[in-house]
Image (cartoon, rainbow, N blue to C red; front, top):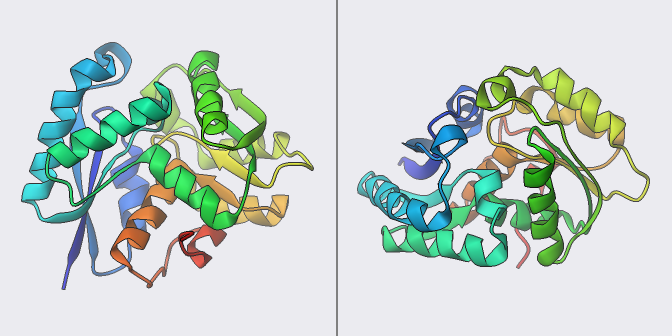
Length: 237
């Protein structure tokens, strides 16, 4: 029997289908809906909400058990209250289980029992600071964060995974309990296991956390092909 998971992503994203959806184990199929919502199409949450409702409804039509609004920056930029508004929009669209990238990252950190985070992003300093504020607001201690201010989605997805490996190694801190690479449009899967071997700590990414969270929501225990020690953990009760 096939179980279906729905992902709502920015229209400019090219990494979800290229890298992320292949990590779902046999028997789980990811369906993707796109919204024009980033770069020149960026709008505030008030204007974005009806689009999220419609996209969630379309994925519900496809019998998706979980629907995740998958954009790290947008799910965090207006703080925990903003994320709750996105979750409510997903539910209005009919999602049986509504999630966001922020929800998945929080669940991943809880499963890893990690409170002190070092993270990097491809974003400008303002967006990166918004993520640090979000993580702090939900109870985490950010010991290091840096945005690399890349020139939009084209550069995000064109940057090789090895570049993020080197930048994360530069972020190594003795007080960090977990490392996080933010953004659904960057390549990380080829080097996540190498990150962990080099740093000796868990490493999560936006795409990896959303795959893990979806499998947790549907109770799927076959994790073959999923990168990182996160997939050895179960969600905190």
